Amino acid sequence: MGHLILQRETSQSVVCVVPPSDRETVIHTTIEEIRGGKVRVGTSAPDDVIVDREEIYHDKLRSKREMAARDAEKALTGKKVEVAP
Image (tube, rainbow, N blue to C red):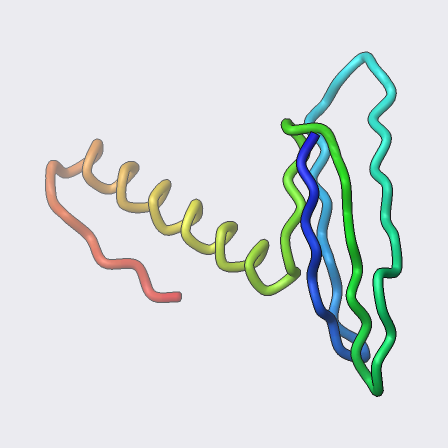
């Protein structure tokens, strides 16, 4: 089981991606510390669960889309293509 501690500010998020499964997946979230406008959040989850800061999650999604578009274009044309963010 992995454990991640993040510091978040007001309105920032944490994303947990749980793969499809026939078993119950338990994710533990603990408020580790509150100081000023920041909160330290600890998250423990099974190793197959992805826990990221929201901005990292969106960066990974964008990278996957870009790779898929490049692979599709290369398969269709044999040419390299640049994908705009």
